[in-house]
Image 1: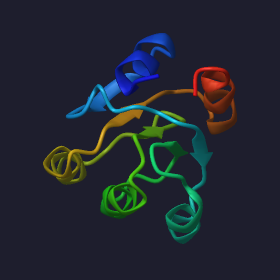
Image 2: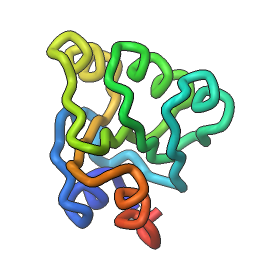
Image 3: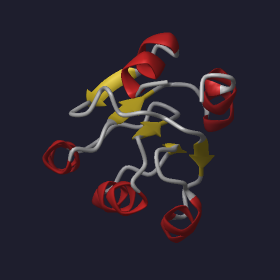
Image 4: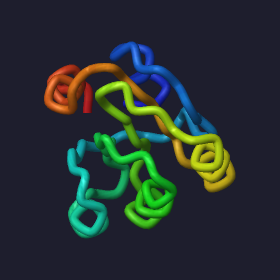
Length: 108
């Protein structure tokens, strides 16, 4: 499934979507950036509440398909601009992380 399709089906808010056709394979949920770097798989959806500039760097290093910010987390303008520059898809939802993962179950 593609990031664009997940955003539509899960009713996620699009914050940055420079690569809507990026394929999604699996998901990872975590907020400790060093763990995400070592454990998130390539093309995973990454569910987190972290919103600082390091999220963009970790998403790029881990080569995730997109970041989903749960629990209504928003991005500062500089983080959003960095995500767009680096080609990182970032979506958001008001759902808690666990419920976000449940909503994605069966899609990825």
